[in-house]
Image (tube, rainbow, N blue to C red; front, side):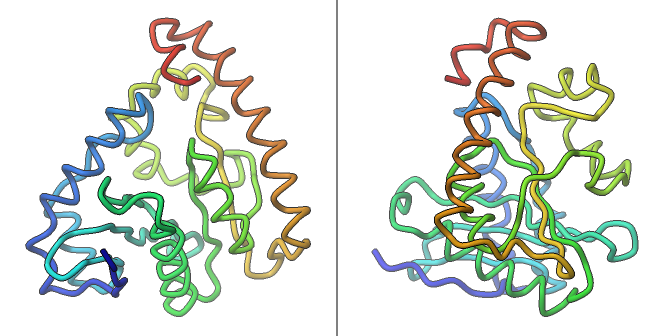
Length: 216
């Protein structure tokens, strides 16, 4: 299998439902993360040139799209997903890099951010110049945070007054990118992730004990 990564266009809208199903299935298996996307929303992203798709021939291999917040002050690469048949091949890194390149080209002055529970995604982000940040440094657009409502851990976000949750916030600031050596960036991400895991256990014990073993 050899998937190629493209900027999605209107011709790729036929994959919208499959993409939504992949995202929802992955979130369900993890027991965390935002579980639902609407196919029409995905189609709009493709039509606007704000999405990246990976294909092996006609088979869907992966996807990611761009969201714009606060009049282009912030941009997020969201919905990163890789089909199970293509995992473990470095495809997520290629998709993320393509989405990052597209975002920087279309929105060069914007701060790029994301929230994730995944160590591999954190490492990919770190390689691109992102660094961990507090939720207060992310967009405060209510529409973005309403998108978390389908996550099974949304109650934790609410109880923390939207200041913290099981996800980690990361940001690329074009004026202050993370230019530390790769080894140092990776060491910092691993250290931060260990702290996140401890935080996760603490929150799940307190707020959602039934899901504690899903986080380990």
